[in-house]
Length: 426
Length: 105
Image (cartoon, rainbow over all chains, first blue to last red; front, side):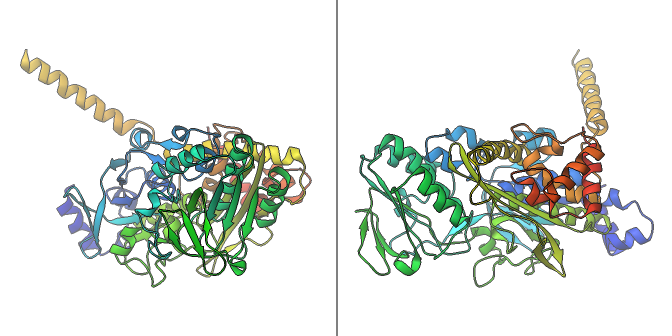
């Protein structure tokens, strides 16, 4: 059936729901629809795969500018010298071969919600019936005075894994013993809330062996952070005296940096010169969400939390770090969970069937050391039209767990990684 | 000869497209059980087939999964993270999850 006749059919019947009422084979109708997914990270790649899983005859096109994806999860292990970057790098061949997803490597420059089209940098236009946007985060360059994209070459953020991870690792390798590493985590909300503190742990693990007289200073824009008691306990146990955390109310927030001298200027208190400075800038939804008018005044994307359809534009869904899905955190695991719910919503809607009640899960591991893992997890459901944590579920690892417990969780962290990578790109 | 080649190619293409059309898909019917269970894949691997250190659950018997989940939930069975997960599900939901993975290969 050509595009023309299919569109005609839809015009005639008004909606797939109407077709269903008339007894037409609705699954077959859903089958001919084209879903375009923008972004091939945890959210986008999972959504593309599960759209095909739930709707095997859907045409699913994934648009991702890079041919390889380097995961933020376990990139701290690369910084700590526990892994090579290749082990956290994934391609898209299996999505093509095993799941029938069409993958286009190009950059989306614009979205036309009125014409249901996305424009690509290469000049191509791709039409969609439903669009899923999973753009991740972008940085608010300039929010910290002096910290722009150029500054990130000398003071890497390493908050998108890849070349930035390698720059930071190299700086750590080149640093002298007795050096000072500054890590500056941002205000909420941001990608991977426990990430900066795991980073401190795994950098400390490396320094403890290679440069034991060195120090890590965390200049934080917040007064508290994810899994805080567990991390602080771990710092005491594994890296005593090595990691110092300066909270916001003690002058931890950085207002200016000088990339040339690698100096950070807290809002109050003395400037600090680091040998290695890792600025994790404040964040917002990825650029295309802004270009396409999918963001609110805070720079994040409001969505219907049952379907992840944008409240700004019809037929466009936003998932992952860019979407407002709190209390789900901005994590790779949560992005995948949102992606599955979103895929279910789209397939249900196109086939005119009622969507099963959504269920969402988050599970995040952090490594305090190679043999010392901690986790946070929870199950979520919808109440009214709002995501809530299922009462009694979830929480963090116990505070005074045995060494065996911590070792098991470190082992499960590695298992988590290969499982989720297989679920997303496998 | 050229025509023969073309005929062979065409029939090969025909066979190939037939194969594409008839290859059994790995699709999951979009049920409440599937909606609950696909979350588990993030740790237990696609369809519950774990490639790493986390136990696989594909093809385990429904009664095994159900009793394990209930024991994790009550604390009768020790766990690192499973107790925190199991507390998120009702008896009925646990049954659906157990059946879903019992049906996986």
